Amino acid sequence: KAGVTQTPRYLIKTRGQQVTLSCSPISGHRSVSWYQQTPGQGLQFLFEYFSETQRNKGNFPGRFSGRQFSNSRSEMNVSTLELGDSALYLCASSHGTAPGTQYFGPGTRLLVL
Amino acid sequence: ELKVEQNPLFLSMQEGKNYTIYCNYSTTSDRLYWYRQDPGKSLESLFVLLSNGAVKQEGRLMASLDTKARLSTLHITAAVHDLSATYFCAVDITAASKLTFGTGTRLQVTL
Image (tube, rainbow over all chains, first blue to last red):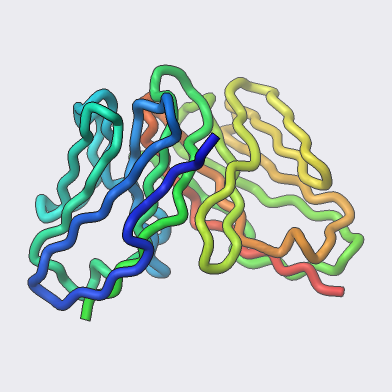
């Protein structure tokens, strides 16, 4: 069974630009969650989508947004990038209907210059 | 607001020794997860603990959950170098795949 995949793996952007990251969950999983990991703030929850609906949202500004498609693939978008947005962005998938393991993808490392 | 604290933050231990990592959380939950992260890599699931008194073991690692004390432990037995990594605990109180992570414990096992 293929794992969670994320594209691109690495990204360099400049301040003010926007970026879109993609996540393909494990086949059959309907929940996709996004997390930001930085040395200073650690791992922080961004949002979670289940069956194309956002079920949960973390404490991030509106510049961070996401969506989920009918095939459960998800994208997150960050507009007007700031230096502080440099981070490893991880997505995780799960069935989403009962407590269970979230499986993480390899992450997208974003560097904002 | 849910707070998840781990200690120690950094642990240097010799091969063959035993040690325990502690994870305390502030809000009642019976869903506690342990993950491992190698440098520059993603998170690998280790254990899922879903009830009070749950105990799971895999190799040299054993995790337990005490929901009344809001405490989970990750016990390392006879550490080996391959266990060197950062270990995170995470709590879910929403039943909607929203994990709140601890600060992580960086484990370094030396010869």
